[in-house]
Length: 355
Figure 1: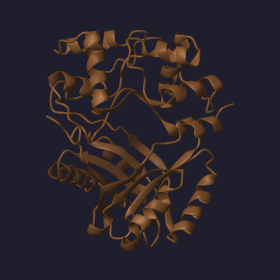
Figure 2 (figure 1 turned 90 degrees about the vertical axis):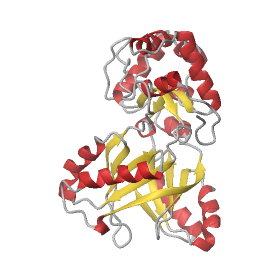
Figure 3 (figure 1 turned 135 degrees about the vertical axis):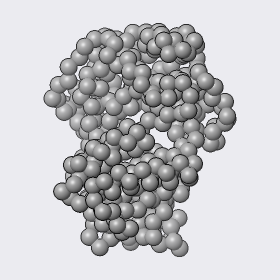
C-alpha cells in the first residue's frame, strides 16, 4: 500500500529487501550477487539484477532516503549538539525563521512541551564554536538556549522493520570481502576525506558501486573497499545498506521519551533500554536545573499513535524494574512539525579533521 506521501506499492519482495539490508550489505566488487543469494536462501526468489532494479525503484520513489553508507558524522570530525528553546507562541514562526537562518542549524523540530517547544541540532567543524553559535542565536531571538550535548551513547540503531519476510532483519554479509582491522587514527587523510564526501549521499546504484566510487575519486577499488570496511570497524561508518524513509514506511509517530534516571542507575538502565528493539536512539544528556530535570533520552517510532503509546509503556515498565518512576520523572515529546532538515555539513567537519 502507499505509505505517507509516497505513492508506491510495497510487495513481499520489497519488504524482504528493506528488512534484510538496513545494514550488513556486502562490501565486495559485485555486492548484489551475494546479497541476492542470501535472499534466495531465505525464500525470496530474486536475481542480482532484479535486486538492484528494485532498490533503484524504491530509491526513485522516495521509499528509501538513499542506498549506501550511513556515515557517523561525530567520528568524522567536528561536533554536534542538541539544543532546546522556548519560542513564545505568538512569535513561534518568527523565532523558527531566525533559528533556521543559522547555517550551523542542521535540523529543527517543533515538539509538544509546555515550555521547551523548539528542538534543533547545531553542527560545527570546530567544537569550540558551539558556545559562540548558541550565544548568537540567543542574541538574535531574545530567547535562552539549553544545550543538551550527548554525554553517553547507549544506542544509535535507527532500523525500521516491516511485517513480512525476514522480519527480524538478521541478514548480515558485512564479513564478506577482505578482513580489515580497526586503527586508532582519529584524523582523516586527504584521500579518506574525498571518500567520505563521495559516499555521504549514497552509493551509485550500479552493479559495481564501489568501483564507481573509486573511479570518481581516482583511487583503486581495492583501497575503497578496504577503507569502507575499516571505517565500519572504527565506527566512522555505522552500517552499509538501504536507508529507509521511515515516514514512507508508515513510521509517522516520533516520540522522544525523556527520563530523570537516578545517576547511580544510568549504567544499568542505559543498556537495558537500548536493548529494546524499537528504541532507535538512546543517550545520556545533561539536566538544566529549574528548567529541564531529565538526563536520559530514548527515541521510539511507531506506525500509529496506539503502537507508539504501547512502546512508551514498555519503556516505562522496564524503567520501573530499576526504580519507582514518579509522574514527574518522565515525559514524551512528540514532534509536531519539521521546521528545518538540511543534514549535517559533513564537508566542513571532514575538512577540519583532515591531516
